[in-house]
Image 1 (cartoon, rainbow, N blue to C red):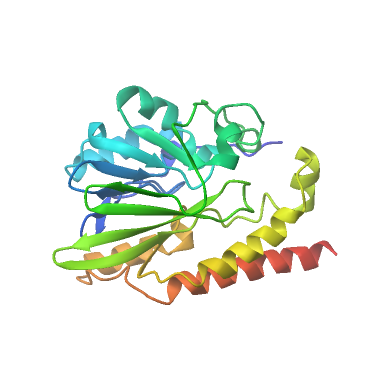
Image 2: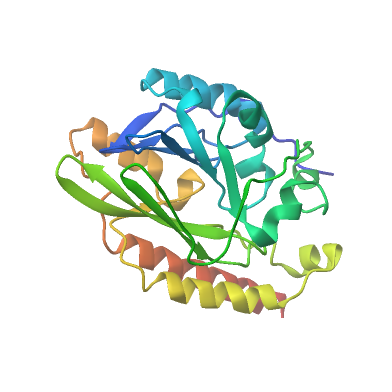
Amino acid sequence: MALQHTPWKGDFAPFKILGNLYFVGTEGASTHIVDTGEGLIMFDSGYQESLYLVIHHMNMLGLDIRDVKYIFHTHGHIDHAGATAALKKITDAKAAIGKEDREYVNGKRDLSYAKELDMEMIFFEPDILLSDGDVITLGKTSVRAVATPGHTEGAMSYIFNVNDGDKEYIAGLHGGMGINTMNKAFLDKYGLSYDCRDKFKAAMDRLKEEKVDIFLGNHMQHNNTPSKYKEILSGNKDAFINEKEWAEYAEWAKNNLIRMMEDEK
């Protein structure tokens, strides 16, 4: 029996992470916004069912959904791309995704993970197909795509600058850390190659070489968003700044996969 998922029940207070970087997502899936000065960049749209929460959260922070110019997707699963079809109808935003995940979101392949959650994906055609190393600049923000396949074939991590007054930091958003799509049952079900595991481990090693000040996850638990939010409320405006956390999590993600592979044996 598929998991019954109710993302509309996962409200979480929106807040400014630092400078021009904001959290506007839900407990079920993270959505981040960067105000570039010449429009907004959104990272992951979340579930269609919780889009009303994302829009409401943006309004609470004085951010207008109609100002979104780009939607960067970490990968093509429903919890990160489910609301994009609707967003493309109410904004002029360009949807960007790793080129290998194009058919995840346009419906050509049954890999959106909607079936596993007993949900329905509203498909869309992406405007920008990203390759490793691609850079897109809007206003004062440049976003670099780093291919991190494994969780999906086209999973992308993103490295971009965050401005806080006269200070600039580097933020990193991991592209997809879940091992649920790299286990034997899932790979066999969809006829996917086991080489995704080696690609994932290599990608995590590569990510560890990136210098990142602010670690972001596409799910709240990846980077302990709730606890850092509490720190901000307590007066620590730099709660998300940690130069070691990014690499530590990449190492943990690689070892998590290795443990699963050992358990399968």
